[in-house]
Image (cartoon, rainbow, N blue to C red; front, side):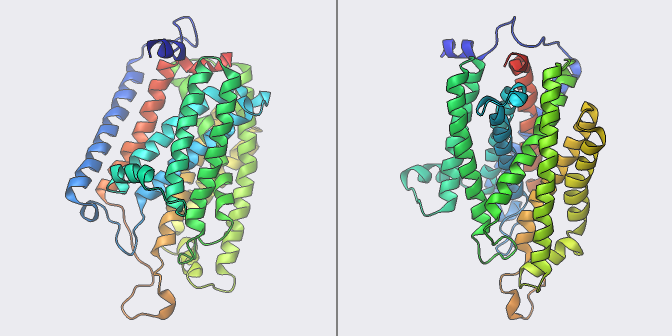
Amino acid sequence: MNNILANVLPRPDEGLAVKSSNGYNAAIGIFGLLSVVGVAFGIHAFFQGYHHAYNVTREVPWGLLIATYVFFVVTSTGLCLVSSIGHVFNIDAFKPIAKRSVFLAITTIIAGFVVIAFEIENPWRMAIYNVISPNPTSNIWWMGTLYGAYLFFMLIEFALLQMDKHKIAGMMGLAGVISGVAAHSNLGAVFGLLSGREFWHGPYMPIYFITSAMMSGCAAVILFHYIGYKANGWKMSPALESSLQSVAKLGAMLMTVIAFFTCWKIISGVSGMPPGKYEAMQSILTGPYAVNFWIGEMMLGLVIPFCIILAVRAKNMTALFIASLSSIVGIFFMRYDLVVVGMIVPQFHEMGIVGQPHLWSYTPSLHEIMVVVGGISMAIAGFLMGERLFRGHLSEDH
């Protein structure tokens, strides 16, 4: 075990120089503390009771925690796919970002697992019965199995990258890509195959999930590379800057694809006023979720980052950082709206039941918000500690 760790961790003369910084250490401490607070709220919810601590109901069973889980696993899969372009498929322009991106993919999916563990109330039961009582006909079973395999392959891949065993790491990376794409398309199917939820139902959901994952991965790669180098006072090499510029261009292209999906989602949701889907679409166009959609999804998630990348021709790193930060925030709104808006339309809306509201209401509870804050803080703290522990992930030597 000691020999393995010695090979995975960089030697003192390898990687980028790490300087002690009170501000950096304070940031790790703050986000670490927020992680503990979030976990404490989640544990308290276990004892207080699921329906007492969270504002989800029988009518709206999925809320903020499911949306955050989707956000994390989507981002993780995107990071895996973007990193694989370089060290799996041998595209030179993407090689400098590989190691940090793989590490971030691991960090974000672990944060997602923590959040979903507090949402499903009995996570140990799911973990046990997923093994001893498999159900291959269940998309949820496949989701747990495939994401578990994905995390395993990503851990092995990162260790092999640290040991400079790039050929075997590439094989593990390919296995991670296959399992990640399978898991993510299956996650899209979890939504798309629910015929009773018209807002989600349709064959395009797995494709949308994969495409949006790539866009999320591009934004996360730029955001965390910039923070990692700025926070530690490191200077990016021309090769790394060029690589991030290539990622930004790929991200801009994917934004246009997501905008295309969004336009047709709106058209299909209002044309002919399809029952269930029309009500959900109206809630995000002119209803209670209009601000989320127009400001969060469209402006922050697509329009602003696309215009910034276009204006600087993907060459100004500070501008790309702002664009990626805006995109990440907007993508979170996308995940939240996707989950919650699909839930708020009553399932028997077309029957005109007396006393049933036009739309169900949902507002996250304090416990839900704090668990999400804890999950996000855990991902950030893990990233900051990884920068120190792996000395910039030896990205310049890849």
